[in-house]
Length: 304
Image (tube, rainbow, N blue to C red; front, side, top):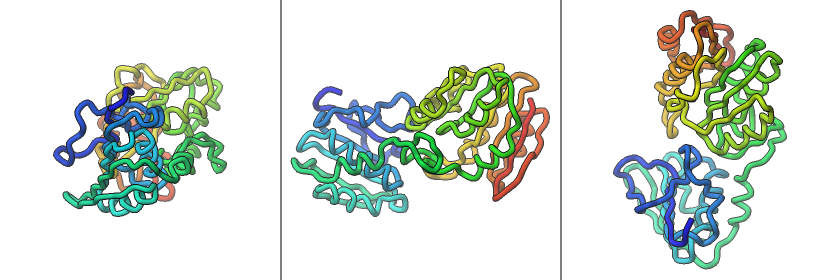
């Protein structure tokens, strides 16, 4: 990025804040965006950051933004009051910034001018960086879904999956946990993992080092033209978008799975017990069978 540029991290609600003209998007959750870690030191005039709620992830992003700002550059960091906004000012002050704060529209906004001297940036960058997690043995990064453990819905699906065969996909495949189980089947000829989080995509490529695998950085809802005629799909669909529950996400995944499968192909998926997926599954598939239930999760096998 050339000297004097601007960045935007995240997708603020319309009318909440005005993004700098020509700002480069750096959120890992927006396919095609730039990696904030790749920005040169002191290369920015302005940064606008919709701060993520997790402490390690938030401080990692803020530290990179401050590192990339020129001295005297402007940083605006903001977040919903109930999702980390109330802690933003202290986080920035720990880096050595003088902060002006305001509250509006259920958000806290923090404004700083980048000082010449900062502290603890390298520690925050390291704490939020990619690493191999000892509990799982997988490459991961704070901010990725279930980054330091295998979530119970995925565990139940792992316990329920039969040996698969042919060519398939893992929709919203994350770090590649399901992919490991799928690829253990010698009859599997190919697996396409579709994932919206760039950090998970990069980790998944390291975790699934197998010539049968292709990992795509894309929104499952917009990747339909890349998948067709598949023998199987596995997935643990998300049901939150931007922190708010959105049941339409799971429905979109179900429709995408059906569209990607050949007639007779199967989809294995995890669903939270409270989510009413039976109706959309019935609309998208010829036969739907409940295969397992445990700890608030259900496993379905759906055949097209």
